[in-house]
Image (tube, rainbow over all chains, first blue to last red; front, side, top):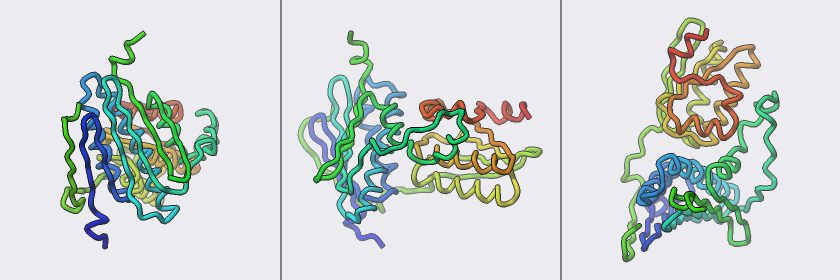
Length: 159
Length: 131
């Protein structure tokens, strides 16, 4: 049985910033998606399909973070920070797990290849990279930060 | 923009509505077994769909239609279950079709080039018209 402290979610609001801390458990991933999408909707120039892209990318990053904590046995919480700027939203998912090197993710075979069906997993990093305008995975002694940035239409219109 | 000042909120997840994340119903259409899925295919929901697919295959069903019209979110976990389902029925010389009406679900499949792997239809009627 989880304790009340393990079950608690904390959310902190600052000007242009929202920080969410969750227990490292998969049942909290859907909550993260809801909160990040709600924050993104405050940005008037961010279209709904880009918010959908962000929801998927954040879902991947958060699930990876929770799995990393599971692998290391860490009981620390996962921190998700949303920064709303005038022309973009960035989300940083921080975990204190075992670290991750995106270069170790195997390349996917072509869709026409029969071997493509052997890859039931390993698409998470690919989705983050394809759906966010910028994505960065940075692992060190303090854990891993995954930064995902989605531009608003205002920024994309710029020459 | 978020408002001025700083506020901190703490709440217990058990106080909020968790709910069931996916619901799967099965019915048959001729030689095909249709699994109608509603909800979110993520790390929580996807394993439930995998279980339903495994049960159908175990019962000898090798022509499957996964109707994802009621799925409003999919990530790599959901994609993994779809790929696994296709692999299983093909090993039995079966086939699998997907019904995808939600643009956001179709986009995730397209980003992974899986629109070139799966047979996608916009409605169950469209899918059944091809068999």
